[in-house]
Amino acid sequence: MKIKAVIHPAEEGGYWAEVPALPGCVTEGDTMEEVLANLKDAIEGLLEVANSNHSLESHDQIVEIAV
Image 1 (cartoon, helix red, strand yellow):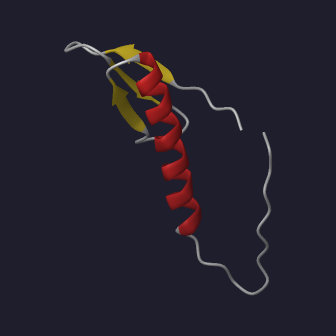
Image 2 (cartoon, helix red, strand yellow; image 1 turned 90 degrees about the vertical axis):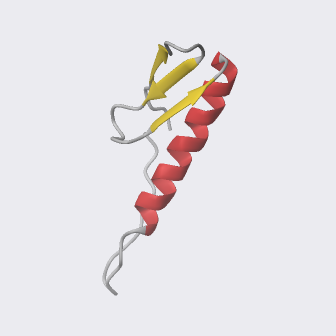
Image 3 (tube, one colour; image 1 turned 180 degrees about the vertical axis):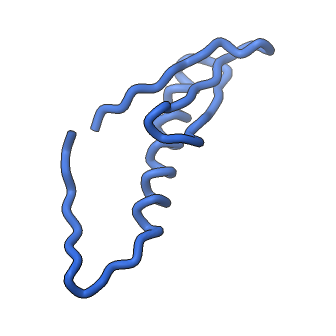
């Protein structure tokens, strides 16, 4: 999956990042490498929580779609 994120320079140094398609998905890092690694963790964590919050009925199906 590819998802767009916006990385901003932080006033106090380092960077902070947000994922507009995933409200609340925000992270920070001292270096570009660190903020990118933290973004990956934040996105994976948010999607994992979002996917686990749904209850399924007996007739429901789970599918995975690559975009």
